[in-house]
Image (spheres, rainbow over the protein chains, first blue to last red):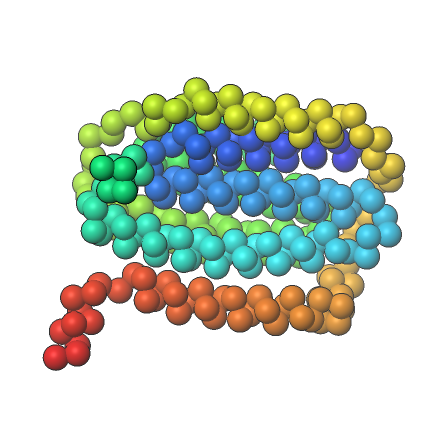
Amino acid sequence: MGLQGYLIVSTLLFGIGAFGFLARRNAILMLICIELMLNAVNLSLIAFNAYLPGSSNAGAIFALLVMAVAAAEATVGLALVIAIIRTRQTPEVDEYSDLKD
Amino acid sequence: MLAVGVIGGGLLVVTLRNIIHSAIAMMVCFGSLAGMYALLGAPIVAAAQVLIYIGAISVLILFAIMLTQAGDANLPSPFHRQVWLAALTALLIIGLIGWAVIQTDWQAAATTVAVSVSAIATALFTDYALPFEVLSLLLLVAIIGAIYLARRPEEDEEANR
């Protein structure tokens, strides 16, 4: 498939994640979409690492670091979402309009 | 084949109405990504993908969904009013990055270079030792923050009495 094929898959996945983040109303699903975008970036990092020689494996290491940061982000994000849902009784983000009213 | 899994899984994630089905589609997507990493000669990253994403994050997200979905809610429209604006933005992002990817002449090697596990381990604990340590601190802070955020405040008040 070549480097370009992987990069295009990564681009499409990032776009899907961005669309889901902007368009969906469920707070947990927005977090899932953030994970999708992070994975897209990881895929491009690994693809660059595999196809561009002389990179001294920086891509693979960065991908591992991104995974750890994503795990931390998911933990704190889900804790925040659960705390918000507990107080507001809804996961729909457009119901969180206290500052607007 | 794996690309179909990745893109199809991603599309299902953002379009499915039931959020539990979305989470399952996310697992399919991440599994296909792990296969791609293995094909790209990075087995250690593929293993980490399976362990962290399919094993840990998916289970965490499923737990959060189970905790928050009170019964089968009558599902309203899953999308915002701004769905067309969001689609436009996403298409713009895809177009821009895709154009850049196609236009650029990557002087890529014809074949992939496999990454050995020992090379990664050596680099991680020599050149990248500082990021590694900072990351461990970040994970500790994240654990403490998550515990603080997720506990019920009234239990804390009762404990103080």
